Amino acid sequence: MTQRVFVFGCQDFEPEFLDAAAARHGIAVQYSDSTLSAQTAVLARQYSAVSIFANDQADRAALENLAAHGTRFIALRCAGFNQLDLQAAKQLGIDAARVPEYSPYSVAEHTVGLLLTLNRKLHRAWVRVREQNFSLKGLLGFDLHGKTIGIIGLGKIGMAFARIMRGFGCTVLAYDVQQHPYAAELGIQFVSLPALLQQSDVISLHCPLNEHTHHVLNAETLAQTKPGVFLLNTGRGALIDSKALIQRIKSGHIGAVGLDVYEQESGVFFADRSGEILNDDVLARLMTFPNVFITGHQGFFTREAVQNIADTTMQNLADFFAGRRSDCWLT
Ligand code: NAI
Image (cartoon, rainbow, N blue to C red; front, side):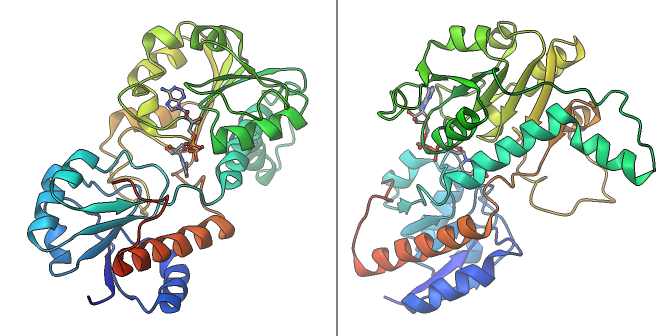
């Protein structure tokens, strides 16, 4: 079998890392900045293996077109796999593998960055000082020491974030469908979702997006949070009902919101759109609030993480070509 892969949704920074990893395995790479969809699947005709990123849409229609053109394997260059219709892939005889762990620290540290920025208003201070405005008016924050952090999804990233917040002297609560074995040693307390919502000064989302977690923060659950609560989402956009969030921000209930992900980020994030008219009114509204800080899905974006993603992706492809399977396999 020819060892070659068609890479959908290639980001500017990726070839530098993917080329070196591909060379080690003797895999030829064809890059495309087109994201995968039912319409673009044809670009990969005759490629038995393709690779996709977080914002590609591997839905049933796209997978049917890929299968019709000979694709048998999809290497995801990310950990989350909500963009892939796994059931359809299995039915169509397409195997898939992801990068389950590349650097939980990258996302956890970015989450801390959002929290510190929002609490100490660093984004506003930066603009002010550039204008020689050294007034402190409106920049008052609070000590994180002694505050309660609620983590929804205490997996690899949630745990890395919890460790940092314990270092800050915070109380850490967690809600998860399973209990992490090291949590007790770190003094992390598992609680119900309502208890976490009611007791936390800061709530951070680190669970996967699936049918159980879709809009886990919605009008009803947001109403249970403390007035002044800080919300952080570096998980997946659709964990939060954005319209319900906007209503709660407008009411003054929410202290601040840090988002690295957004429900409808596909087609918006990962590209320079300065000069374009933004057609997403929900995102546009979120961007207007002084207490909302948004980054464009860059939580994973450290040198170490990108290197690991490239290495594991190429290892997954080499395994596919050699007829091997590993823990990274989803199918
Ligand atoms: P993980 O699998 O180690 O941890 C996920 C945790 O969520 C597990 O402990 C699991 O039991 C828990 N969970 C599952 N269903 C739940 C539910 N219904 N309610 C509460 N908890 C639930 O995954 P990891 O590596 O920590 O990543 C978490 C998520 O972070 C990924 O699924 C992905 O969506 C997101 N992510 C975001 C990145 C970014 O650049 N912003 C980069 C990498 C991942």
